[in-house]
Image (cartoon, rainbow, N blue to C red; front, side, top):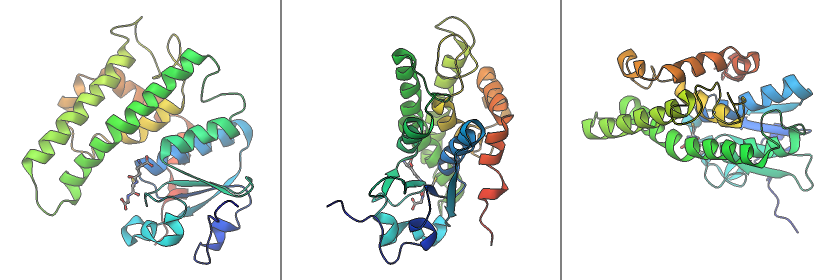
Length: 245
Ligand SMILES: N[C@@H](CCC(=O)N[C@@H](CS)C(=O)NCC(=O)O)C(=O)O
């Protein structure tokens, strides 16, 4: 028998949710999946419900949450249409789950295997080589009790370097000219790969990077603005996801 993913402590809105349910907070990781769901809504009318938690209260370390995601971090996607209900942890895995089950036409993915591979490459790149470093920048510049110059410089330099990797891809410097999105033939197509990186990169100023440091990344800056115009993106980072105090 499959293990139960819910206990008596699981909030009723999570276990009684009718279909897809997202447990999130509007951080860059949370926003990636929030945006994907909002995009799916615009194309397919996809429905889901949301539980907002405050990670500062450590709700994500409680047993009911760890049963869904032993890593104890948001966001988590649960699918109550599955039998038994199924939980998905890790932003990129959640987006790929949605791509498989909620994006039948591959609007945000690719049918062509080479393009699909490219989409995975850039999604994994940001998941493994971008988010963890920019996360450390935010920690050491904003949350750490003492300012440790070595740590700040190390993580800022690495984050700037990975911003530069995105710039290389978007500039088409080693390929066939500028592109609009990270994956796909020609100028590329807006996909999960962009949704994964964008919520982080758009925060470059909050992460303490200067205009001068970003000047060398013109294609990246244009990519940030291009994606920011999408209505689903605006909703995905918008007020509906703010915790009501
Ligand atoms: N690799 C994870 C990272 C998730 C993550 O770091 N979430 C942060 C918020 S952005 C969190 O829940 N922090 C609270 C904690 O560490 O307890 C993913 O991509 O889902």
